[in-house]
Length: 289
Image (cartoon, rainbow, N blue to C red):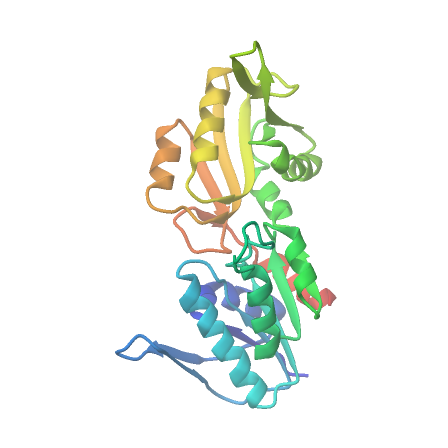
């Protein structure tokens, strides 16, 4: 059976890597903008019944999502029966509930649009909000990027893997389990009625190499604060690792200015710190399914 991989504008290199690993055909696709900013999509060549589309939906989210909708509906109209959709970074996935009256639940709306456009199955890397899977009526497969990040960190000298808060402790535990090293998270400790200190919960980082791990880095504020705390407690080296390097405005500059030695991220989004590819993880999951 012939399988076809299509890479959207936001994930062409990643799509190519997945196709190479699966030895599938990488489809040529023409995508451009009209003078008024609207998208043009054309899929070239023969199109089989089983197609995988790879398209991240980070910034510019609206453009990347619209392109994805056009690709999916076009494939459906061309008679494709099974359309797997790999969305390495899921834009509009953070609001999975209505916090204030009248708010749009963007995760639910995007899920409905993806299904309506023709998606048969969804594959994602480390969803920020796990609850968003409930909005789909089709299979959703979530893949953890932590094994590939751990592989990249294995040359470090017995590091401590730190979650910048309790919510990131699971990521730290997953990587530490692979590397067989220590892990911890930062927590606030009240010293007095007016004084609060943030520090590692149970492990002394003095003289140690430390990796701060999180799923997303957007503004960098959480990482900057964590780095300052770890340096104050004597960390010898601080490396920051994340899955999705959103890095808005001068976030990367602020992180390095805070005393970080290195920043690494996966290629779910294109950035200058995308040193770890999730292509193998995606290919393995597609084969498994």
